[in-house]
Amino acid sequence: MTELTRISGAKFRARLTGKTLSNIDAKEKPRLFWIAITNLRVDERYQRKIVGRASEKSVLSIAENFSWAKFAPVVVAEIDGDEELFAVIDGQHRTTAAALRGIRDVPCLVMKAGFADQADAFAAINGGVTAISTMQLYHARVAAGDAESVALHEACRDGGVTICRYPIPAADIRVGETLAAARLARQLKRYGRDVFVAALSCITKTGDGNIGMVRAPVVEALCAVLDGEPAWGGAGDALIDAMQSFDFFKAYSDARLRAVQEGIGISVPLVEIIGDHLEKALVTEQ
View 1 (spheres, rainbow, N blue to C red):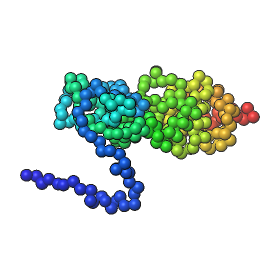
View 2 (view 1 turned 90 degrees about the vertical axis):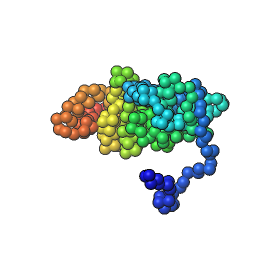
View 3 (view 1 turned 120 degrees about the horizontal axis):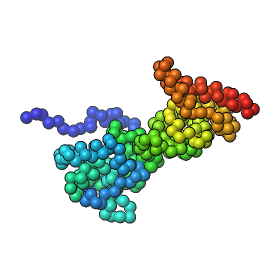
View 4 (view 1 turned 180 degrees about the vertical axis):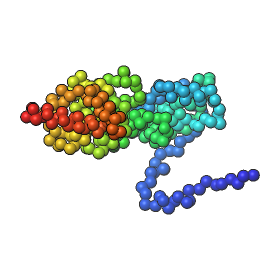
């Protein structure tokens, strides 16, 4: 018989020395129950419905090959004000697959957690799963009160930008909407709030809102230009006025062509194009 090894954390214990540890005793232990699928709910404030080919394919695959041996307990939380309903934190896809196969109840790990803790748990459990989008994780972290995510949310709001909850076709994107959650977070951290908001405003508050132009390379180029010329970044309304005549779509097309020809990132030629425009426009206004 193959030797079975005990589970022990002893060899890792020294690595926790001096760390600030979470308080395990502060909350009740989760309990395991079989719960009717009709009593489970999805809170769309921190996770989304099953939409898109990848998500639908996942549900169908689980349903087709359903086996209890592959079915991990669904992580849920009690819903305040209703003892019979539970919010699904992890397991929406496999529960939907179970329902598709006619299964009425599923094993659930029930935890006591308020809304913020639910969102935080969702982000923590799903953060390492490649199938989940950075946009979905971003919204979960905002709901959980994560400081960096909330700061990004507020900066985007002030710049007229909304980070979508899930990928949507380019034809359906509206003014200010973007899919670039992770890249925008890095740009905010690198350039600071004032430059970041000014850059976003240059896109959303000029022309007809420049639908589809809140792209990472465009924002990166604007941030780089405004960071390099603080007087431009702090020009306020004058900056917006100067950008009214800027053609984002032509600039992006030209920059993309140069990027391909020269083997460089799109933001590199965009910096030059935007810089040349502002140098002329702001000097003219002055």
